[in-house]
Image (tube, rainbow, N blue to C red):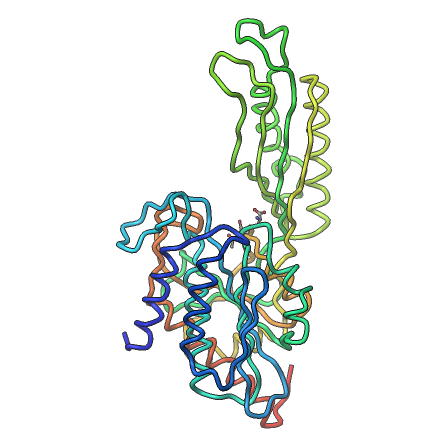
Length: 385
Ligand SMILES: CC(=O)N[C@@H](CCC[C@H](N)C(=O)O)C(=O)O
């Protein structure tokens, strides 16, 4: 590994030490700002937005602004890797690769600071991707308004692909998402007198099983949807009938219509639970993310370029039911997202996730070469998508 790449690997390890939840990425922001301050400052301008950062690198004869976006937040997971550089924040871990996304962002930024291109570049470090979502408010912010890229790219690590692989597709890449929070409120009581109470642990158990029937019985088998309840809590002690229970989950669909169907069915099942268990239910859909829809022409052009440039092995992949608030960027700015192969047996959001760092030079090289090629193409009078 070259010294320059070793530096970004080391920066990724330092970011891995300090995972923070959405909109609380204070140490992460400080760390990134300090690294950005070490770069030659002549052609860069830095802005902060909440816990996020925007860095503009001025080009020599700008016609357009290219964007690279990296997400910043960690997850509430107790890390269980074999790393020496495990999280120093108990109960939090970079288990979705955002440490790598940010270090790659620093690599892309450094490249364009050291090697001028004609167009401008904005590197966007965005908070709260895992929730409640930083992309939408960031896009509406004054800080980004006059730095809005004309074309944007982002990547996400992919445990299932080998190092050296980049996977993407024109059109929909990631699903529409909606969070799901259901509070059940009944009547608590003594464990020995169930007839005088309305037990919300039992109500939650019934509802949880019924929710599983939505995908299997209400969605066209040729369509795709996910209803996952990732957290359930209820009750206070083993001999007290629970007055309250809470289910927390997420819904994923490949279309807005299917999202509507799933939500209607959840509401119907919840009404049934209220009637059956004589309780009250409150539903909250939390934050919703728009699907990640890759610009078809630009993505196809990138895939052709990648095939020819042999910067990485290209895979045209199927859609995934993951969500990403980068979908909001792609709603406003033409561009695409791709999967970066990091070849590890444990999946995203797993306590043992150890992405292969040899993927980092592949990403920095591909992103910088592609952006430069695209910029040169426009300036040489070539066709501009
Ligand atoms: C890439 C990835 O894993 N993204 C998250 C996005 C979470 C969206 C939202 N908070 C939800 O849970 O619905 C994912 O879980 O796919």
